[in-house]
Image (cartoon, rainbow, N blue to C red; front, side, top):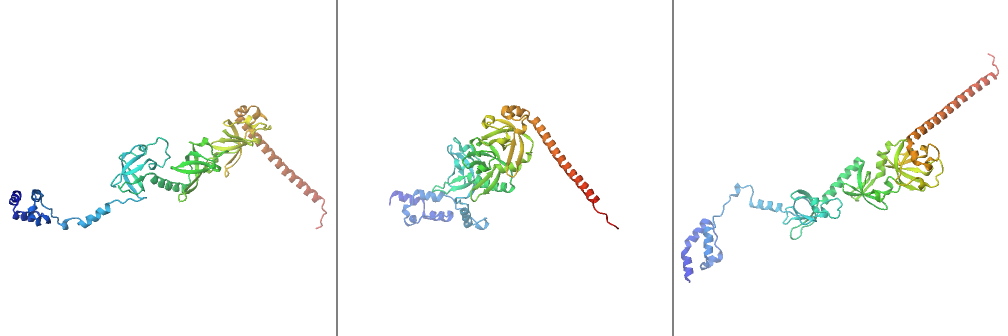
Length: 389
């Protein structure tokens, strides 16, 4: 036995070791019990200075160790696709994504494409849509990987809320405005609450349907169909105009307008946001040989409404009723427009006079017929033989 071993055994008598075990509840390793000569100085000082074990009376606690363990298990996050949770933006990771604290082992990722329902343009950054330190509601769109990181989305939340709002709109059936973002052969695409809605060409007020000139403009609309299950959203510009704007259109009134298209059969004129047809037969009392020489696209005109069909959304217009003299539209259209209100008043007076004349003629005819019948009755009575009483 070495001198070191002798000193070690002398330094810590066996009785003291047993006292330490009973006093401080220090459990001596089995291997050291079997070979007491292998005690190290570290083991002895550890046993002496490590302190007392806490003794807990579980009867006086709120929960047992088993209950506490169950609570810890219940608080562990289990992330699945489709789960909705609340998180905090903790930092931007470049211009295209943000890191989100959601209670996982590592921060979740919010890509730029999942930060908004709005269409993204070139150069957009994540900082435009979310702020560091702010809390948002997220939906998980990718399960956690081995490191516990998940991908989350705000766009999914906004998408679901948008459909819910549109379902309410569809029930209320209001007129609303939406921006045209794209046109195609079949019609146009508009954004309604961030969702892409289809506007059929047949439901666009005007002559030529959808055109590039509509892109970026807001137009009045009403819903035709809202079906989230089929991902189908269809709107109508014609229905909105017909039901709410044409109420102010009256026959015989003169309106300012702009020619939006010239066709072989006439011109389409926009008045009060609606499109009416100025047929070639209603341009002038004289024959129109060259329509494009008389009317051009973009030209400001004055027209009289001579007929309208509110149910179908059709408006019939006329400029020949505004001609001071037949053929003036072909010779000097600006002169016709300058005198439009005055000429319209004369036109209405003439129409009213003609109407009164027809009514008077019909009245005289009825009275004349009555007089004739009365005279005939007298003649028949005078020619009848007398009857003895």
